[in-house]
Image (cartoon, rainbow, N blue to C red; front, side, top):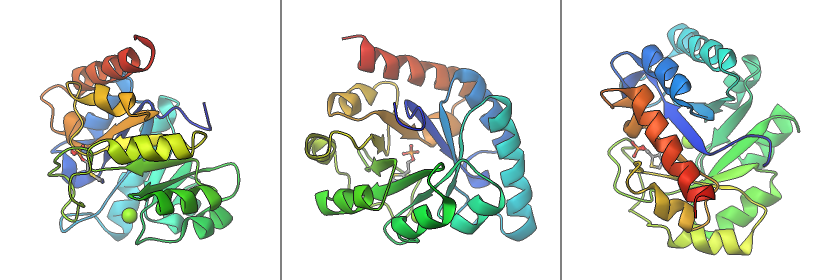
Length: 215
Ligand code: TZP
Ligand code: MG
């Protein structure tokens, strides 16, 4: 395992659930292994409210010993002493994120091609996120559905670079993501909009572990 256990990587912002903090607490109880604070879009909190909400999420993650990773905002990650930062191709370059945040922290990068994956690795990424594997309604500017092919290609070319699949993943379709060579899966809605987020997390974790070790 690298710096962090990517098995079940939950991503959420205040706009993804009616009671986001209670969803996060339930998700942590259900066994998510990593959390990304992703506060973006038209209904996202900004300024002090964003910071206060982020701190509440971080506090919960610390209680459960789960890494708290900030999406996009390297400065916020630094100010909060977050465990890491996740950047996309349109955000700060991964090598700047790495330089700023330091060697011990987690840096994740969203990639869609072999070239982007190679660059992320050279820039010091701890993992790459790849997707959308399936149809998603949680990201307005999501790229077309990619399936699992590129995960297989990148996994074979760069076997030391952990890959997390993202986009439309559920307990029912998670197996194909691991089959393709991913080290983990990340989800928003499968947990954030579940009737019972703790149970949803538990089921996803079980599905992930079964895929990884149960063959
Ligand atoms: N990047 C690619 S798809 C996606 C992001 C952030 C959204 C994933 O959300 P969901 O609800 O798990 O499909
Ligand atoms: Mg981004």
